[in-house]
Length: 140
Image (cartoon, one colour):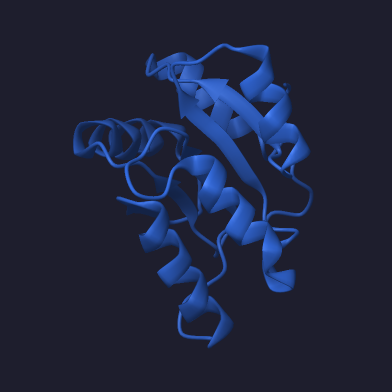
């Protein structure tokens, strides 16, 4: 599944990375710094944390994400279940969600992500150049 370009990204809105692995979040944070994007970076450690954040967005207490980078394999509420709940809310049907952090290259997982409204699918790869290019691909 190819990641779709996101039109007219508001640079004041955060890029939100959701992953239960603190090491992956820290790596993502550091690699994000190399990308030199204007958007703030926000790290959340669960699908529930993302849903809580989106409730605050609905109350105008937090900015709506520009992009959500969502881990697939998380305990309690995995990436697919999180994506389903995000897309069920009319207010967030258009928020670009990329189900990207997975070790699965199973075509069925990719198809499932697309059918559920993901804007892309990407294997976990934390090489600096590859990750920076991936982040910039949203804005080019």
